[in-house]
Length: 164
Image 1 (cartoon, rainbow, N blue to C red):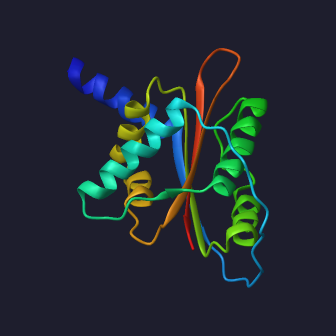
Image 2 (spheres, rainbow, N blue to C red):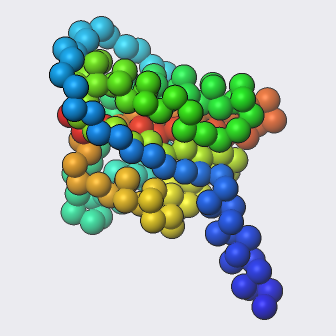
């Protein structure tokens, strides 16, 4: 009985502290030639490496990190920290920005909060059907990643997937 309660709490935590959303764009805009510079954290690189290792292990291509998508992720993390909640608010705007900047034809994102390591958040995403489908989608070619700590030291993470 105790194991069942613990498993239920873990599953509830996964569903309450991470989520995924996807959007496909059919508009025809020109892409930007603007150069974007992004500073990545160690946690960002670790998450990217774990996602790519998982994709390769199931026969998919590794994804390239693109700064435009990471910039959108950085902005969204700051928004979530300011609001104090995990969300996909303004996802449509992020998707449209990426269509304009890098000619993205499909965009999806996974977000998470409060995980203590790259392995813990990636494992939580892989344990969730919707998140795993996003990570394992063979159409995606690139991604952006950002992790940012709030004032209490808890990490907010946004991982944006792009097909171009």
